[in-house]
Image 1 (cartoon, rainbow, N blue to C red):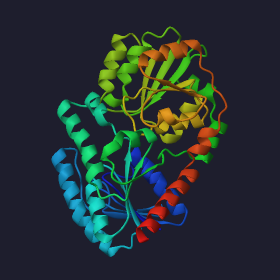
Image 2 (cartoon, rainbow, N blue to C red):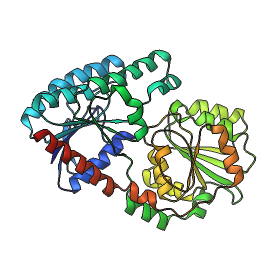
Image 3 (cartoon, rainbow, N blue to C red):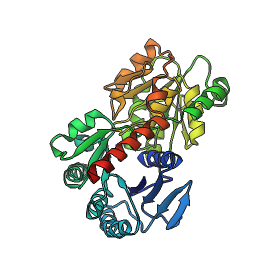
Image 4 (cartoon, rainbow, N blue to C red):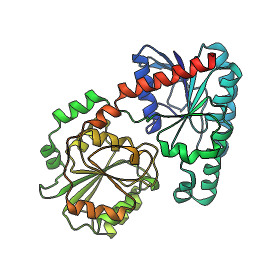
Length: 374
């Protein structure tokens, strides 16, 4: 297959874009041709090939509504011409700014197109941003799903399909985009020395080693976690991996709650370092207010570490003996005080392996192409 990925942002960005990059690489490994159209940053080339993926970056986007809208308009005309010059079997686009231009351009050429909708925030937007932005984001989700000329919408979990409800007018498919590299997980399990990591972080044997991973943004809820842990009776050390605009606020709260010696903001770390820290920790805590598919949760579970997570995104549908779901962060101390022991459970490594899920995407794309031709 010749597959065109369209995303407002692409490699080396994280989150859903990083998963898109992993999927693209895996599909290349299976013999498919992958092209990607995305925005251009000042330090990136307008066209290059990385690991067999041909990337086009015609023009920049921006963070403001107007700049993103302008990017979307330009993208439509660019894609319409791009599809006339390239033999593309299917278009796969990452919502949101790329959705209308990619679906309408693909429809002009009769090319099947899939929109990755992930997880709809819906009314949760009003808990995450100011009311005006929340309303805009909420309407944007519904309008894109309703008026995009998709041949199919792909979601992370069944709950998202249910919440999309009456706005969906096309075929839906549920495929996670959180990928586990089985070889990488096995290597980390084999080579990680938890005692050395604890020693390097100055974590005593009688202290619970708690770990959280995520950008320091309001939605990741580090402040909520710090407030809850200030009431924890057990001895602990919380290590947070990630950087962002909430750092200063978090540091002030850590000081105000008297947790300076118990909470460490470690900043950015490589993926390999992060996995090693996951393997060494006693519990990974994921306090996010909203999430599409928290890869860190799946990775920690694949490493057979206990995870306490809010009920966000796909987490309620994950099956693991090491997963503890909470409705409120106030439930975390009770779970920790009762004792959390890791259990052997290999289901995650099988269910979310990159190889297995790539096969699911491959079958999905091939079925859509056949359906369009038929």
